[in-house]
Length: 137
Length: 189
Image (tube, rainbow over all chains, first blue to last red; front, side, top):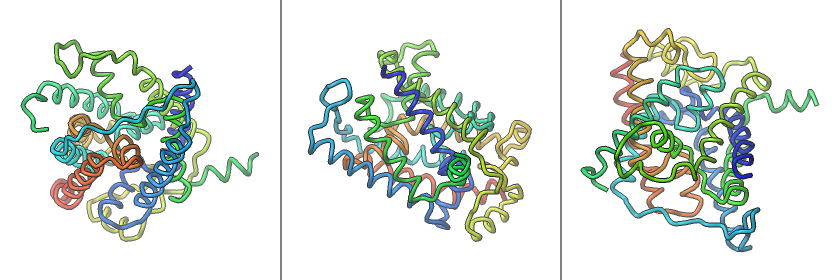
């Protein structure tokens, strides 16, 4: 059941990524050069809707469709890794013009060269897993 | 119906696209009882495919297989959007952005990514190789090090006011600005 719902949400998300143009290298460059409000408007209004949803879910003590308590744990307070890792991701985000979700969407929409980026992303995880104990967190 | 298709086939303005992306938060919490995040899929695939003995990759990735099913959905959704909901008009960028990118030698503004840098035939250029290979590696390494990406930290984490997520987003912009303002002018000079 969860897999089926995840598939539907994924299809919806793939369409959104395309129509919002958040997977566009052009848009990402435009954002980092502060030449358009488009991406900032998207991220800001997405957070606003997300935050309102979390507030309502908590206020109403809403349950998941399976009737369970909704689990929303705090992120681990690893500020060093959040900033350094975030910076490394940011370097790559502006090079590829795509974060992980959009990479899949780009492949689906025909820019199949991103299969290489995805494989490299997986190797990036392997490198992190190998070096993890030596990195500051 | 055809009018509706025509209407959603236009690029969505930010005030439509943003709130719809924000809906991913309650959709995940209520229907999946999981948090929104796309970059974990790299970790699951790594744990599933690469033989290793690393602690970070020793976990029950199968219990998170919904995340990989969602990836399949994203692929299908993007295919549907490009096959049936596409508009032929080129992307509407700000004039200053077009001018700046032209200065980097970009001439082809059709599609979502410049074919000059992101196509199989472009891989013979070192710049293209660097972006596709190096950029992909940095995205995989950085998201796992940071514990999330734009969806997991910027949208999900910020939606429940997680300070580590705010710090991560500051990192995203630090890295993005370095690439955009320092590396890109050097690489595409």
